[in-house]
Image (tube, rainbow, N blue to C red; front, side, top):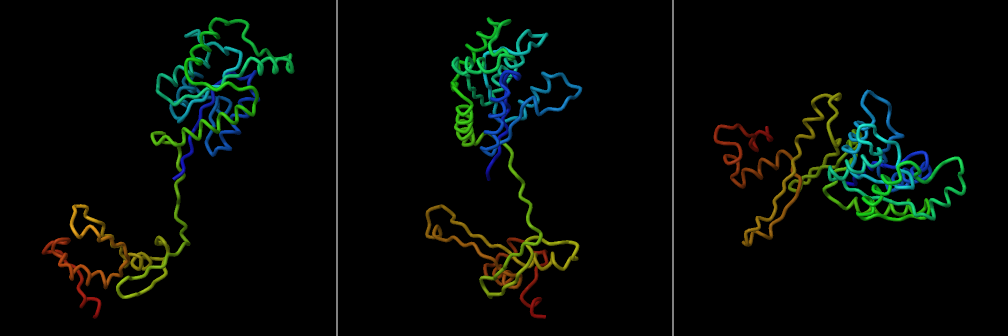
Length: 267
C-alpha cells in the first residue's frame, strides 16, 4: 500500500519564503506531507521543543540552506536551523539538503533590496555550519525549479526505503458493497454484503457466516504433495461433508465438541 512520508522543512525564513513554498508544493505534488514551523500553532512548549517533536514525528528531514545563519538560540548560541539539522543527524533521520548557489543568492539580492540574503553578523558560525552541511551529500540549486526537481528525485529514492513508516490511509470497507459467494462443490450462489450491517439484525451476520474460505498450500518438503495448491469457497453444508470426508472432525474439534452432521442440514 502506498505510503505518504512526512517531510520536515528546515531553513531560515524571511530570505527563503519563495524556496520554502516551492518545497511545500513539490512535496505535495509527490504525494507526501510537508511539515514546517509556519504550519505550527503556538503553544506552551518552547520553540525548540516543538521543533524536535515535529522532527521526531517526521520521516525525512530536508534542509534548504541559503546565505544566512538564522535566529540564535540563547542557551546554545547556535541558530535554530543548525540545531534542527544536528538534532536530525543525532536521531538518525534520513536527511537531504539543497544549497543555494552563489549565483542564485546574488540574483535574489539584486531583485530584493529590502531583504538581506547574506550573513553579516555571525559569519564564522554560518561558514562552520555550511561546512558541516557540505560534508554530507547535497544538491546545489540555481533556481526554484531546481529545488522542485531535487525534492522529487530525493523523495522517490526515500519512498523505496522499507524502514520508513510514513502514513498509510486506512481503507474502510464500503458497507453497501456486495460479494458473490459460490460453493465450489454444490454450485450454490448467494449475493451478500461484504460485512454485516448489525442494524438489520442478526440474520445478515448468520448468512455471511455460512460461507467459508478453504486454502491448501504446498507443504514444501519435496513430496508429490508439493503440487497441491487449492483456494476455494464452500457453504456450510458442504463444509460438513468436506471435514467428515477427511476425518478431521476429532482432530479439529476434539471428541467432546458438538459439530453439525449432514443429517442436521437434511432435517
